[in-house]
Length: 304
Ligand code: SF4
Image (cartoon, rainbow, N blue to C red; front, side, top):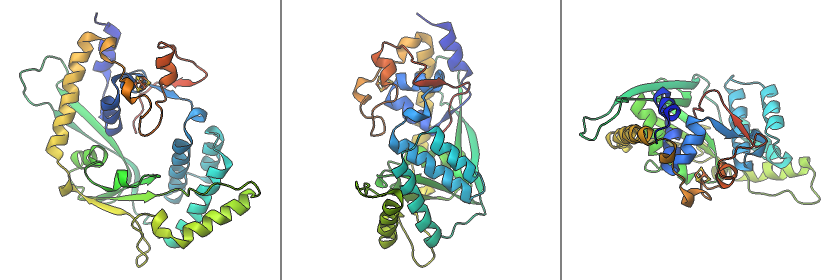
């Protein structure tokens, strides 16, 4: 049975982003809950890895004049970030300030977008014939961009093939970009000891980071006080990537005819959504009941 409101919601979707594409491939129900209905887990219930990543992003924004220390305080409070994760970020930042010269001549959080026409395939049967794709660059410079991540798995982002969806999409959207610098920072794995207060623990983290900066700041270059791994446009198969976006559009056209059931659950993914349990497990396990204690509904779908 076709559910008219779902048909409408899909037709009203104005764009897709690289992160929405990833979610679409992981689990159709996840994509539906997050990007069509606009649900997300409340900040305080997110995993520690997501919370510390958010904190790092905010601290980075302070350096580039996009946020204030009050904003950093707000993130710590709203996300209820554990004290030891705050200490880790402080220690990393203290070392980064000492070793790395930030190039502030950039536009932060720059939005880029383009429209992709779907190829003229016989199977086309729908009203959506163009796909709007949008992306946000962490930092844009005249002919390149920088993506910054705090991650325990830097290799996930330092090689072109697995980074194709995110980085390739940005190259696809802006033809003037020649390369990307991935600034990958690894959080300390040291745990606080029973006898340590936050100052002592912070000092231990600081000493560990400053003694081996290449481990924490991937691609650290002592000579020019920089770090990062460079990925070039020529390393990505952008035609293949564009075609894969077109196939999503085909599938959405089919799915809107079928309705809600077509956003089926991918149970094999529930325990491994980007290496963690899916945030929507409490909804799926409770037969689609959504607890307002756990989830927020956004007016707009989230673009990341
Ligand atoms: S819990 Fe499983 S089925 Fe439900 S949205 Fe997440 S991955 Fe999909």
